[in-house]
Length: 445
Image (cartoon, rainbow, N blue to C red; front, side):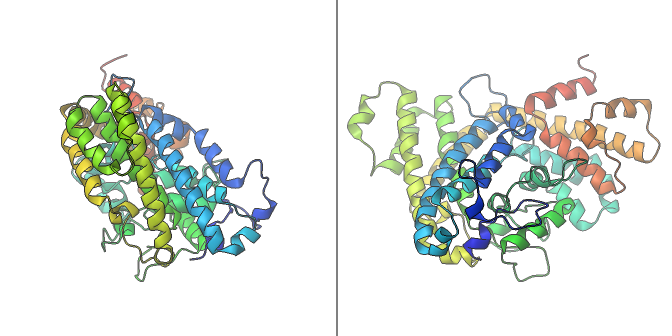
């Protein structure tokens, strides 16, 4: 892979190449990407989607939206710092007009939308959609779908749904948000289809990145960027190098900030938790300043800022040391999986799993989420199919009135009708999913 091609400014539908030197410096193409994401309805819904604690009654806990904004800040720093060094190594990029801010803008835009396709109720939302088709009433559709189509459903993936949101053509809206291909490439952490499942231990095979419905858009993207195809008979590619920085930004934030949430909520004892944080920042901590802080939140905030700084430095160093391997597709793990703080990070994640992600409050809301998502899928998929088969009941017609018009398009294929409903349900906020479920189940009028 080469950087000139990887930094493509192309957008869906372009017939001519966009030259970096011709860009308006007051509003670069990669910065336009960020703006379009921020103003999208899919991004707004993240303000009421779970990050750690579902439907928390406090005003402190992070939502998907605040998490995404924080990831973008870290991502921008990672991109700028890496970009500054890459411009020295690849002087041709400078001649073409690229600056280190371009790298920062690409990574920031990809980072701010990294969770845009995630369903309500956290990661259990993805599992709930999958379970509906694997063991629930949705199993009845298996024989009418191809293996790849069915796998898209039973392993419903927020990353693939994000790519759908960003690129899907609707009536009057060609190419979705029409983001630059460099930004879409950096967003794509798993550039493969849903089968085969985890064929290797390479990081790109951990999950998948697009649904069959968006295969054409995906192939156009990887061709333009010059991503390297893996040597197999399936649609599978090695990552855009900047996807490693997006992943690192996310890993840094959820590792440290979820842990911070757990401490401030009292799920993790302060003394016990701070001991682990201090291990991570022992080389940079100002003990005098730390001991002058009288409040728990201030102490935790100080250590969090230091920890993020330490991990940013480590991620930048690792990326630059391994640039050639990354460009060749030979770097098979995430950046933080190979860093010198791996043991400390794993300790923090283990505590977060035990004390936060498996807390009673989280589990109770996730259980409720399973039921809510299954019921919504069943009602809407049934109604949409009955309408197509001209067997819709009055109830089906009433239910379909609750679906926005964009999800009621006439689709010949069963797979496309099901994906319409999955995309709608996945796009719901936690709160609205609960309210809609109550209405459909007749609990409120």
